[in-house]
Amino acid sequence: MPTGNDDAAGDTQGTRNHLVFFVNGAKQVVKDAQPQTTLLQHLRAAGLTGTKLGCGEGGCGACTVMVSSFDSDKKQIKHAAVNACLAPVGPLTTSGVVVFFRD
Image (cartoon, rainbow, N blue to C red; front, side):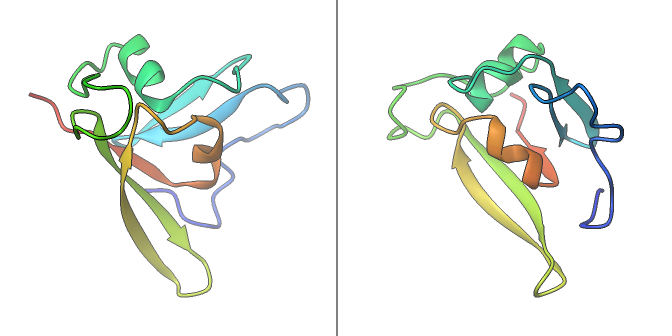
């Protein structure tokens, strides 16, 4: 699991539009990322279809995933339930791990 000390992006030259984050411990690189891409769209495009699109408005919970990130002030990992249909993939580069649940 990455911590606040890990350089998840590695060499950042020429990768301005690339996002790097982790899904279930596996490194994910999204090249030429579009700002409107949601986490749900990315997961399903990557073949991870356990997370479903229900209402598309965050009300039904079908797209709920757990996002974990390292809180460097408290020196601990924090977890949050996130509606993947609404969450843009961009801010995940500051998070450590995304966990979704398969059927």
